[in-house]
Length: 290
Image (cartoon, rainbow, N blue to C red; front, side, top):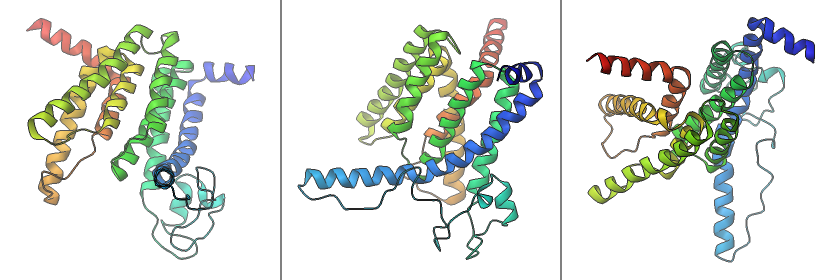
């Protein structure tokens, strides 16, 4: 074990490759989380509703992140280990089920590839150590939240709240910022979007932001500190506005069609993680020159 640690410290290339491969494997698991967690939440809601109305919850077979075994949703074909190799299996199967030839969504290799590339970049950017491990956890959880929000417009507490607490935990040792900045970041992140929510609701009578967005920005503040929140909000708002307007024009969507904001917050958080300090310093230097 000591020899492996020394190898990863002295030869960064091996650490980058290891993180990239790990990212691919985690990406495969994230696909399961993205697909199953909303369904698990729906089951739980139905069970709670039945309990509140005095009815017996439906007696359903186990359904969680482990059971049942992964299978084709069209024909029920059980996916073997050889058919579950990240990216490679999709290419070998030509994006189709082995049994029924039903098309497999490109979402699966995309999530795996993005996870692998970002993980490798984390290893290159931060180098071997606790900071890289923490950044990997941050990236993976944001990736899961992004796709769940795209699919369902939900940001599950099962991910956002652990993400918040983990940010505070890692920053006890000043991994990305000091603990005071992390705590203030969590509070400020939540209250910022909470305030915008109520201002918009009082002005229009409509809900413009979900509570999951409050918790996600609070989590990002817990990881990166309150100093990064203006940059995160600015980046996510710009990207969200551009994408939203483009979707409205291209797809002719109505203005009242909800567009998830979580992916843009997550994107802003990732950019701030890697380049936040540089962007902030560049802006301050530009401002001081003017």
